[in-house]
Length: 582
Image (cartoon, rainbow, N blue to C red; front, side, top):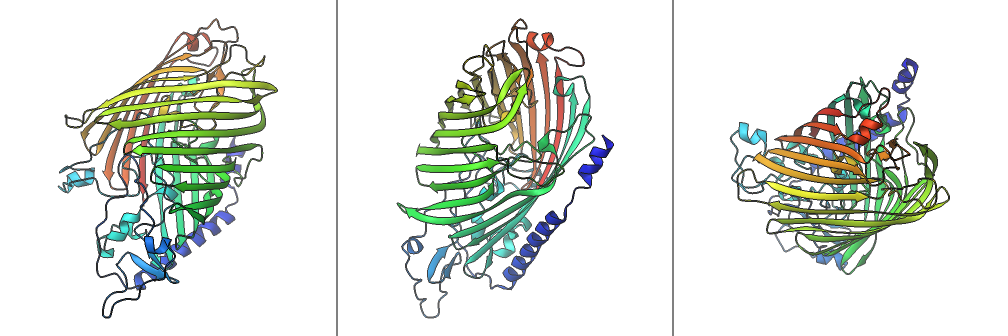
């Protein structure tokens, strides 16, 4: 054990040191050039490109640049262009509209409706300094400790409308103009998360440990034609009594490194090609997510073609998974491929529908609880309809899955139905959701068709309890959610889940998709138990959050009957998380 720990901590880091050095050099050079450039004399106010639920749609492309026209000649004695515009090799660029690769953050399930109107204090810092605001301050980051979307989709275009002297320190690191054609942004985040787990992973182990993570990124644009984005991550786990899961430890690696190239325009909107290492996030994240709760987020290598329109967005991608390696450089797993097509339709504000196809191929052999889990290749066809209207909320999603697993045909499925209500003008701004989640199981694993649904890369932590003991496989989950806001900078989120197996002869799967409890006879029944989660987020300042979460699982007959030596049927956890972004 000691030698393994030593091996991890003496991992070679010269390549990573070089990567960080280049990143810091770029940042310093950009800041120097930016400071030497003449500041605009006038600024125009623009609407916020970000709110607490989702990033807003990208603006239309500038008509002059889209048409490929030359820059107009300036009038005598006047400034050539408005303050947000530059002339790049004869083409006019309105930087308040670019880049247009910023993705709208899809609404997850059981989404909250946080307060958005003042006068009010929208952070603890606002309250301490007695600074009421009419609306939440603009930011490219979420006002919550968990930032779901990748940093390369953070929308900082609003910074163009702020005079340099009025920008925050974080805003001064964004939208740094290098001449007329180049734009550079940088930033990062640090988080630390303490975890106390009683009967950790349903063993009888008391597991107290601390997770640490640092992220640093650089983002360079040439006009709206070419983008280079890179992100470095360092993640570690300290003091754990059980072996940390793979996403907890990655002692310096490349999280993202890709290029975007503008391939063409279709109906006035650009179509981009992305190639390299990248995070993927689609729809509700029930099937494809970067796993924001993990110390090391999911990442993939491959290509993606995408376009965003006023009502329709479309993505087509082919990638290979990049598993986190604690003591080695992360490399592509050639045995795991994820590809698909994703369409999103927004008929009007607040309403949207997803239509998707996903192919997941995993040729790594795995047997868990006597069940041959892989190799497999699955094809998932699904749709989702969700939205809000006058305080009424809804979220419906369903998917069918076919393919081959260990030589057998796959016929499986999942379904989700949720209804909610928000009372905007009442004390505490309450939002209530009631959900039913289902994922199919198999009454006779390894024999005949495989019926256990297999989500490729889901965000299970968000949906099926914060203890990560239940995944979207062979499960029924009747759950309810309550959001309260004692003040706009405090989010209180209560959850209740009642779990039971879809098939008592199949296994119980955790949030990572691992089968870890099973009674092959089915005599243990299917009552997994009940989980209660309390999550409280304190928005300390515009880029600072503290999150506290207490969670308890009351095991049912199935867990009691399958406990065995050194295993348990009940568990509880306490999480304390601090995150600072810049």
